[in-house]
Length: 55
Image 1 (cartoon, rainbow, N blue to C red):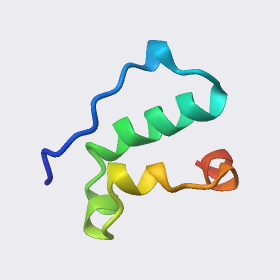
Image 2 (image 1 turned 120 degrees about the horizontal axis):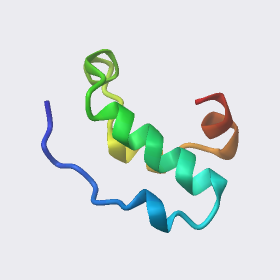
Image 3 (image 1 turned 90 degrees about the vertical axis):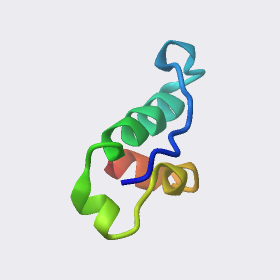
Image 4 (image 1 turned 60 degrees about the vertical axis):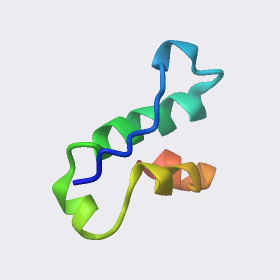
């Protein structure tokens, strides 16, 4: 598992989309199934708003 975590502070989220993005990134830190499919915290940065809503 990668230890290249993105530093974040959910208390500083500017809007709902940014908060959801941060929470998804935190969840991926412990999601082995996502890691095995190549989904990383950095992948979440490229999610569209629709993908965030689905998350």
